Length: 382
Image (tube, rainbow, N blue to C red):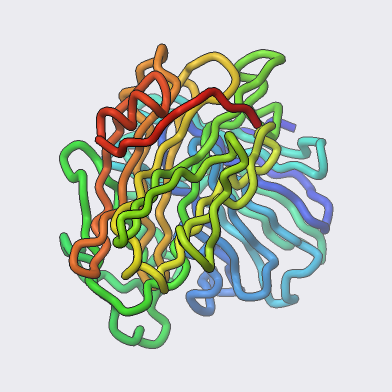
């Protein structure tokens, strides 16, 4: 059922998926609301910095231009009255610049309700898309499409979230003990204008997680719909240099998955050959052993399929414990080149410098020569 703004439809009281699809990057969020229309605390908000709430009834997976919330309506506490879904624009854009924006509610493979936002003339930077709400003990979905001035901070405060609005700093330092009921909405985006950020020296950075994700067609959990029946295999890899001079390559090609606990202290967590894994691919770096690492150069390459970086809309996010997520997008792609050098993490006297690169090459060997790593290359397969 396609709804117009203000329209509603009954939904089954069970686990449902809520898809938010946009034509340009947005930040999608969900708010668990009570009788006063407000949250009880920070745990009631689900967004890029907190992708799951305290009782796991609401979770979020971001797939670049597609955000998917999983909501277990039948497990929500009895005093929860609503679950609201919102979007805020990236980079000072307004809703009208998104090209498309829609929300869809799915039970299994069946769409039970959906709504398309009319974007023409919308000058707001944020939008309340829709909400689940209880009525006489049953759940319904209402399509709202209500504009909201400001970004995620005023939107979160509208729903009662107590936001930590300390100004961002060029250097991310370990945060002090958080004040009660404060949530940080910080996110760092590396761009041409802001290509690097440094994380202050620590004895233990914990588990550093690097995620590669890309656009997934609305009719598939992977990217097959974009590239025809053959699909595309977009792989994550890394060159690793240790302080003792040892070097290595981490990638699925050649089954070089690395090791987290021993040298090189970097490990590729599986290989998503089909695009069926909704969270994309992950590379983990042992931040407890950061003192042994000199540099990690992160790259992505199209192992199989048509070189079409302009369609993948790829994004790489670096997650460091107690730090805001750091993301860089695979833009300026050259479609005849199958490899993108994305970013590098450099050990600078114990700190981590994260530097955006976004340069495109024909293969690993060409990238190797460009950055002077000195590996010897031969043909390989997975």
